Image (cartoon, rainbow, N blue to C red; front, side):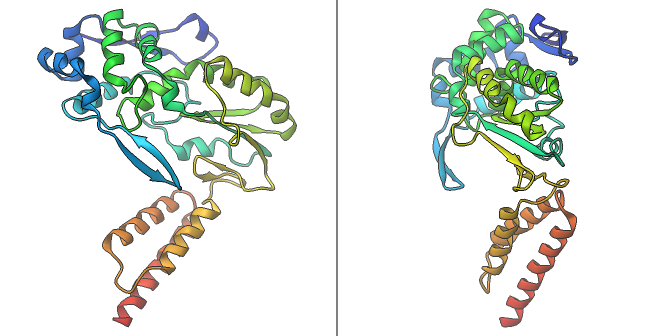
Length: 315
């Protein structure tokens, strides 16, 4: 094989029961084979990597963020690289954008807990610069210095991890792997539950224990070169709705109130001849609701069908 995934256990991880795996790429021809490009294509991309990224603004929940998806042939190369990186072993408490894990599974860990501590890392992707990405490939994944430099060039845009690139989420996970290891050890020490879904940190358990560790959580994040978002660091008791990565977790998994009310409002607001795209969007949201609460989702489906029948009769 021109490249391999092998078991590796860094000394700083010797308390972690998970076997950490690494990628070995030593020469440029190995890299070309791994990502499915010719040496000529690789040279053309590396000559001006930023030109192979697009840029546009995306609005979500009233906020605007910049999206930078790659163009071909870089897009295909990064998809191939992501397939390889997805085989890197990461501990089970890291759940974001990892094959076989999901936001739902992340939320379920924290169901039926007295309280939850939620923290969000500010400017997460922009905080991970090209030099840190190079260190990930060279130190964590055991590539040669030359290949680590080439890969960091391919995977970054304007000196940072770009939103919308196939490899950005898994590289972001690797960037915070040691931080997550420390936070998990802190949680275990206090008999708490911990997960990290990319930039979302969640710890759950008794309220007094969460209050006891909150300053330590902030310090660990700071020690690792990141910053907790000041307005998104909160401790929420069971008396208040607790939402973890889109899952209401107060009493088992459930649909967040705002999400449920939003679907109902959109159904009620459907015009006499609703666009097909609107119906598909509502059906998609209801399908997602099924994973959280089948009873509520079935009721939403009935409401949508009733509304569509009513509109047909009016016609």
